[in-house]
View (cartoon, rainbow, N blue to C red):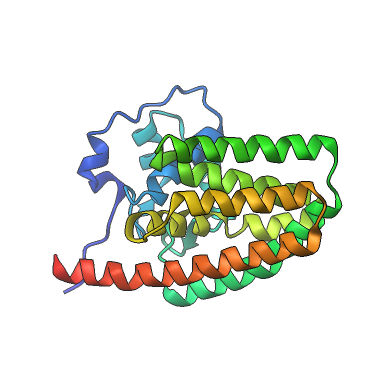
Length: 241
């Protein structure tokens, strides 16, 4: 017997949530809202997303819904199949490949950012670090992933390489999902995470490309180990239900 297809309109818990958005919101805010619900698991992996259902769910027209889905598709969070768009379903192989790409290319981005550092970029990075420290100190679990990725993306942009940024942005959606898995199933120490990010930013600001590159590589390899554990933990949790 064929398995029933998960559909956005069938997620009762979300339908009962006040998610109405002002119709004047631009595609980026719509994309941010969808990204948050997908990365937190409230819209599960494998869910089919249609412009009509997204528009109805968020109280918007189909044009910003379409544009937002295209944004998420560019980030790799949504994929197109012959019968529509779906939220990605990540495998352990995907996790290994994404991390291999990140610690190769993000190391390059960090090194370039350190080489390109200016007074303006110092200020931008330190502001992003303070935002991350604030959500960590305040116990804002939902805000952690958002600010964490905002800091990483700030570094990517400071590398000043449009082609590098495009490739890294193409896995941004998957990175959000994996970060949320770590938050749910992992044993992450927020204080250690903040200390690692603080060291990274200070090395970039100091223009120490070599040491900054080493820090980000070690950080991402540690993240891979943690993420692989979440797959085993989630499998055990699913079986026990």
